[in-house]
Every structure is written in C-alpha cells, then in structure tokens.
Image 1 (cartoon, helix red, strand yellow):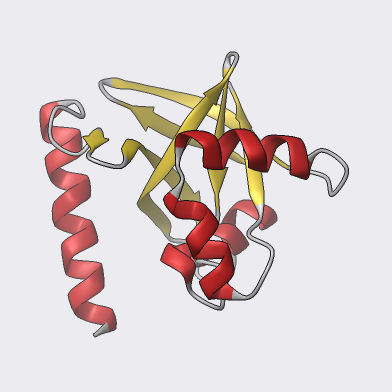
Image 2 (cartoon, rainbow, N blue to C red):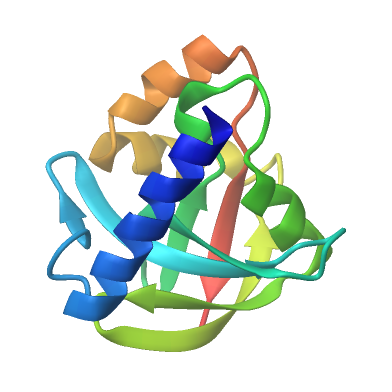
Length: 137
C-alpha cells in the first residue's frame, strides 16, 4: 500500500509541476502547494502536496496525514530542517517553516478549519493535536 501511495504522490507532483499547478493546485476542498523537504535520516529530497491557507504573506499548513494517528514524514523532515522551498501554482520560492506554538495554535487552527473544515474531522479521527506550521517566504 505504501508504494501505491508513493506512486500516486509522484504522479500528482509531476502533474502539478508540469502544469504550474493548473492540475492539482486547486482541489474541491481547497488549495494545494508542493513542499520540498530533505529526509532527516536519508538526506533525500522529497516533495509532498499539502493543503494550505494564506496568512498574510505566509502560508499555513497542517501536518494531518489525512487524519492518520501519526504525523506525516514531511513533518519530521521539516522539523529537522525548517529551511526549504515550496511551489504555489507556478511560483517556486524558499521559505522558513516555524512550528506554531501552543499559545498561537487555537487562533490559527480556528482560522484553518474555517477555510478547510475537513481538518476538524481529521483531528477527531487522529486522536492527536495536528501540528501547524507557518511557512515564511
């Protein structure tokens, strides 16, 4: 199952990049960006599609893994190396990821689920607090 998922992510990323986000940049349930991370153990560059909302000039992403009980791999990679790049539609640029503090999380989480309501269900299903990151250009 893991390899099937990796195959579909690779196809998704390729189509997003090839079309400048025309395919994959906007889904029925929200906007998607591509985040590049470096594997904390392998050192390999990885790219993942991630739902986001704008927060001024910044981008807010949730490490939900679709409501899985564990954080996605990109969460661990981003925590280990917060300097990375993202692609939003046809723009690719460097960002620094900042983990949202427990004090700021309630406000930002409320804003996030107001625009991405499915994430409230993800957190319930995951039975964990879904981490948020602010991606600062």
